[in-house]
Length: 134
Length: 134
DNA sequence: GCGCTTTTGACAATCATTATCATTGTCGGC
DNA sequence: GCCGACAATGATAATGATTGTCAAAAGCGC
Image (cartoon, rainbow over all chains, first blue to last red; front, side, top):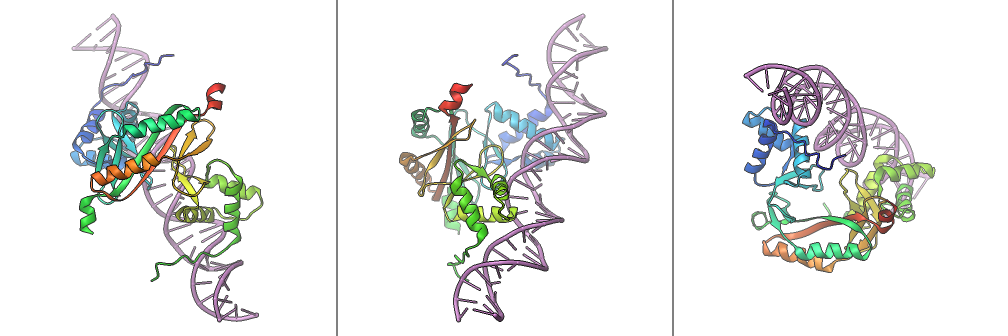
């Protein structure tokens, strides 16, 4: 048994996925990223995109969001723990930090005796641009 | 066209689904609820279960959770806005309130000019029982 | 009771994600 | 630089929850 099973090998595909995540701004679904790679002429299988994204997510290098609608969305984000304020219309995402929220979640969990605590939070709304447009 | 299309009719199926939600404690998937109805001898189609749950969720009578894993989980909850502290192992769910979180979310969204704001939050952890067991 | 309208439910369709497995590419040692 | 073991890849099939469809079967108002 070894906890250090970081037997990750460097492959072109992995770099390609990572590169696309660098170039794209908002959240993208796995299928979107796959399509972008295709357009770029990169030969990457859909399966690999999923696997790579999972790996990156596990490594904490990208953020995953599960919006109501069923698709997983991925995005390269700044390091550290933070949450997202997402526009329902255009998908623009703003990174926000809420130390108060973190501590509140931990505190509440501790009060109930829960350990090994994590949490998820997303804020949805309509951004100024989309609000004026409609 | 009428915005007041709350033309809900009372049917046995709807009562049955609601009854099961009353009897069950934790979160249940639509398929679980359907199975329970079957065991009870109620004749309810899977489609109807989904539709009924959606309706109840829209009406705010039940809560929906989308845990990482893909299934929608439903639960009858106390009225009003609140969040859940869920055990990863046994699924026990505690309702928690966090006025601070609500106001924080609203404030942050407002700062960025977002309107029509909503948010989702789930706290995951291991409950005392499961923690001592392992 | 009657008729209109909603609801139901069996089944098919959808669609993102995961599993499969033979082939290919990397890495580390020689 | 070359080789062999082993992880990574990727085309395809499988999975499985959710949604769509539409004829038949209840509700509700009168």
